[in-house]
Image (tube, rainbow, N blue to C red; front, side, top):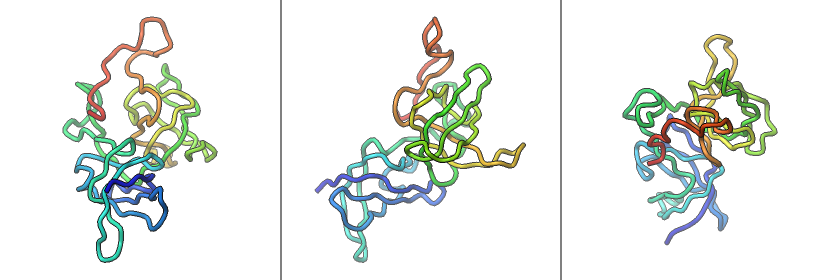
Length: 183
């Protein structure tokens, strides 16, 4: 029987997380092997899953849906057909793009699903393209090597469209290809 729930948390480093079942009850454990070794879960997104009990605790056996994201780990950098993040470290977080400056290649993300948390700096080398102010993103917390302050790493948009190349609102279109993210 397929169940529906929301991703509560995901640790990419540890390769596991938890789902909050829509019908209530205990959180459901999910291991990376049931979503694919090159996939991650995005907190606060909906998933569908099959369930089994493991020593009296609920465990997902198959997970799919909007909350599952496939990472391309075969390429080291962005571009060249889509590329992948070199490393997705730490627990994935959710935030809202507050400001994005395409010309300067940086911006800020407000932490939290509603964007009410403190702002984090994000550099374009930590994104898969240009971000759109107001869009919801998934990211992991990192440390800026220059300032030793927290910043957002491995940023991906989880709603709306990720833009590559030129400013999508300028004349001439988006430029560049969409790559293979999520393929």
